[in-house]
Image (cartoon, rainbow, N blue to C red; front, side, top):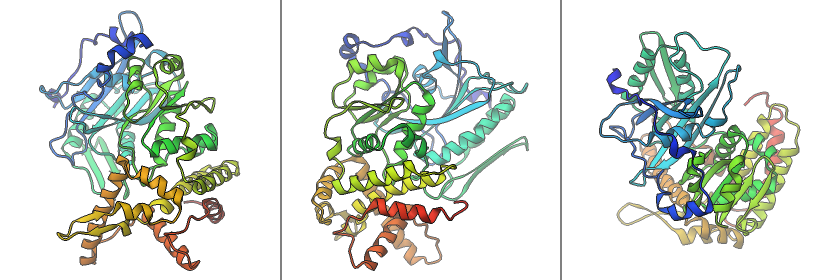
Length: 493
């Protein structure tokens, strides 16, 4: 069992991680900016394995007495794999030098998305344990510590639940931890709605149900709307939809983790296809200079350095001050005018409402953006036709011109060129094929996504008001207000 683990001792050379890039030093070394995308990544034996590898990252002092993260344990051990362990450990603890002991137990989870040398996605799901009043005598981990799961699968809700279960393993001896990881590594990803369950000698048991819909996850929407004003949030969303570079500053790693996860959740039913690093370590600040799309967070202590090396094509937001530090200049004209006006009304209504639990407000914010996508791309299925050989073909021109609004047509001409839209269309094709199979096998259950349900509801509303999906852009603000009134009568949802 233990021979599958790679313990990385002695500690790595931390000299390179005390370096902070400057304008003069960063630009001549642009050739090295792909260092993250060149991380050698271990893929599992099959694409549906639960994980490819797991890292346990700890923090200790270097020769100069400065706290530095390092990879204390890796599973599985494979001699032909070469991880850049220093980079990965700093991605888990970008704030290692400023961490302070805490007597209150605290854990926080986040994820990052990198790319390997073959340009394939690497999803890192991380749970940090920052401290507590005391540690169990059986625990083999010294806080602060982090466990990071690497997978080729984009299943954020599932892996956050799995991290929550693995967090419990830290109260057990190392042998239990090793065996649990071994059992998980041999397991396959459950299908949507099914559970992943492993147990070790009745000592430790893990059971995680995979959500029916992987793409839908919930961020802290109320918190984000309180941090940013409505117009600023709309500019961030507009930049994301055109797959531009977006950079956040904050003094808090927790705010960066939560904010980036939340803005990504607002893209549903679409998913971001590019670099995501919630908090960039100081040693990798030059990564902000890349020209490919990204969503990156940086601690405010490095703001001056980053602003010096950035070009002017990056949207830069100071979350703590709710301030826009830099913009391209056309963000207000990206979203269709009437859609943007309706969204602004809906979000303002949600922000100013009284909601002690924040649950209603979160739902209203989420539904506002879903409604926007329903009205803009809800007709996608009618734009997919069957070719002579039975293959499904997306009719882009018809899709873009189907709606009568000129501003929506213009937006779709841009939006259909993005990677996230290409992935969305392929998912719709796959879903259409599954629907045909379900029609032949009537006994097979058919799960309809939240987005599909909202499209169906919209079509029914249009029919009832003798209007059609093609030429109509409805008032999102009015919809969300009505939706909110209905939810006020619910005790739980």
